[in-house]
Length: 600
Image (cartoon, rainbow, N blue to C red; front, side, top):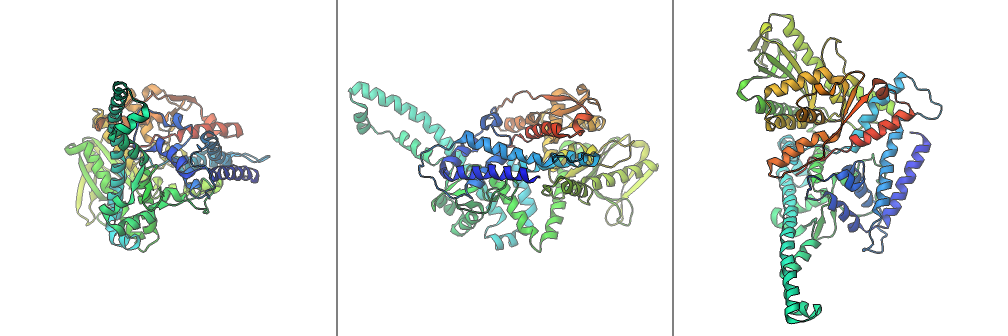
């Protein structure tokens, strides 16, 4: 980033901090909580409502900055200048795209364009997109990944994994119950109001006199509950979990407002790790309750990565990811397929493969990679080098593809291929003539964004070979469950993989669920007419079909607006990142960052 851009960025952030110093803490956090609280309007477009490009991440940053800025506000009743605050927020987050612009007079060659074509979407996706998961998925992951290290976690933090999960659920349910009570009380309050005015009319007394003579218990209770909306009473936590556990939890996951060293949008945000404002010794304020479960995962991961348990933690994470992958495939294929795990190419336990699924004449070679997504460098060239290195690492997609391709080649080279278990025993004998198609699938534990949805950016493969299908574990579960819910079959999944192979490099999306959502809504991808001259981009709202499924399973009917396709993007326009084109790409990335949060 040029010095000039850095200066402008620092100027914008400094102006925002100055603005926030005059803002009452509860007023601002309360406004955020109103937009991201426990209640959900399933038809509401949160991006139009907030006028922010990446509302969840931007609000996390805003509150982190607020709680790291000294409070100089004098009028608690004064409303925060939200329009101005949001304008500056969008300017700050938008400025980071200028990392990828050429400096004045800089020569632009093919290497320069290639580096930015990859590093820009990865960078913007990392910092602008929150974890796209449902609560249940994260709870399950936390339980599976961290429970084996519970003793160490409890020693270091003062709270166990189970207690952390139960506290999260307790907070969520308490907030929901308060909203439910407010809704009920509002109806009762309306009845009391009607009775009140009837009393005034009948008794012919003044408003003030009627107030003295009538008791309005529901109206009083409504006001009390409304004052506590988004609040958790610390005493209630102590009653449920004990004083010591509550104290440990509050120390880990809450913040008070004080001056601290947090400034840049791309810095480690203290509020992402501790997403509760400690309003007083009696009350906690929870503006974005969903972030608590993510914060639990963030803090526990950090704790174990900095400990002697690091290697065992990674090993357990790998094993649990493989186990979960098998469960997901079994949920779709059930007894109609044969499953083979920890498969070796010879009896010497060499060349292992994580999972084979044999369904009739179709074979699925599934490789699971649980590498962690690393924070990208700000420098595009350094970022590009790291991205490529990670992509090709032992835990990367390239390695998974290579492993799958090796086995596919082995099977197609011989009439009969024997595969073994870890003890050298014959596990399965595959006959070439009985296998009509082979799919290579790479499942990642974390979301790799555009690097997974369009492997043509970085994957090295023989020209005649089709692209693999790469999908993160969360989306794999959502995808296959979505196919089942929409009355799809195993053949629906196979059709999707076939069409993904056919059009792979001509489809642009930051989330696999956007593409599958389009497939399910339209019965296929053929009608897109995707080709090298017609690159097809997907509106993020295509993935909301899975949110509809999520809500419908819980008896909530929702209706999202019809998503649209972005067609006619030529190879030239997507690759030729000159200054004008990067600005277009910046706008596109802003749109791609508008991912609807998987939510309850």
